Length: 306
Image 1 (cartoon, helix red, strand yellow):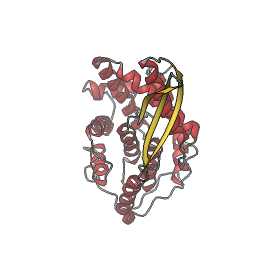
Image 2 (cartoon, rainbow, N blue to C red):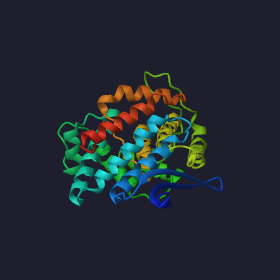
Image 3 (spheres, helix red, strand yellow):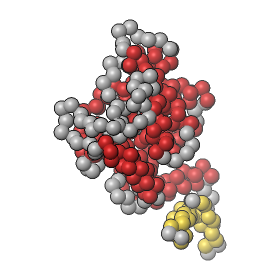
Image 4 (tube, helix red, strand yellow):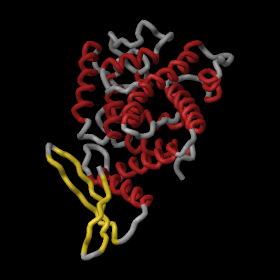
């Protein structure tokens, strides 16, 4: 919590920003001198936001660098300010366009041949483009339904949430496997990545949820969202739909704390998959810079940052 405090120093009005935080059962206090005299309310609010970013950026995190934290926090601040100033109709149009692009890109990364325009026809117009498979049509519809589920869900990350989300992703596509852990071992064609044996999957997902809860106050939220997403891909708990699931879980965790969702562009598919492959081995050196850059590009494409 950051607040503005005015003190009388040698008969002059001295302005300070004060940050009070509880850590390990104790309160820690940090102050910053702003200057003497009158400061407008608008300026105070701006300084408070910058001070909060400064405090968050100075904290040490397991994986994120200081400059990465600062970049993410600035993007979050800018995004929320711009969104707050949109009229209801403008915000609805933004969400419609963003979620259409998100659905197109996430499915395209997994091999769907639907274009952005065809995706729009399917999920917003209720039309089936000529020459496209029924599976691709359902993939688009399901992804939007999964987005709506994530947006409406107010709880914590749980195993039940993961299973419910996956059941939506594969609805009317592979109902036998929708919302059910794989019972066989899997491999990705043309890849040497090895996934855990099927019998280990349920416990590994439970462990993932446990680590999420354990690290909530240790990791930065961006860090927590990305690593949880990468761990899901590494476990590969389902026969199909793991990539889409992992990105939706990442965005769920980002949105939970007011961070903008990330749309991974299909045009960056190779770079993304390379970063994910490193992440499968616990090396996150590529995925964090990649996703921060993607987020910045997302917001710029929608004119939410300069």
